[in-house]
Length: 143
Length: 77
Image 1 (cartoon, rainbow over the protein chains, first blue to last red):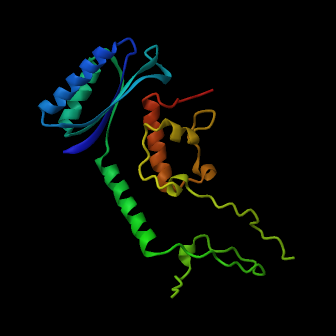
Image 2: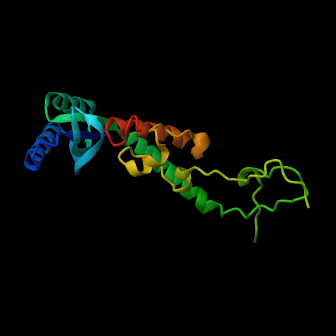
């Protein structure tokens, strides 16, 4: 199972009830195939940055789902068929989130093990550039 | 008085994303991405913005996704 973010824009002529019905339909598609809907993010009507099919605004909906590729393919097929979906985008986010998490942990470890380096003393008489990063300096142990 | 240094402008450019500890650049955050979109709607080069290479790559991907979803314009004038 992978985590995907499936976003789509629905036409502004849709009523909120119709939109909710469509979202519910998509949810049942996902759950009927052993997928899991983590989050449904309905932004409501938002203006578009440029015209799409002569529409100036649309309903933004972002589904965060745990599913496999076949489910995403099915959702995309349905988006293509549905007349009231004017744009969609599905991206896989589990690897990106995992990497982000790793970076966060690495940063915490770095912050925890080494206190912030003291400000470098620059000798003004010397006509050399100070090192760009304090990491080049040997760590000074103070007791 | 010491002689003026050749690189007198010591403007430390810090990657905004590193400084703010943003690990994942989300295409949905149009407000954040708009900082890196000049008037014309192009992607700001990192030699100007000072964004590190790792984050610039993530940023450009996010901007392209945002453009597809009409969150950001392809061309603005």
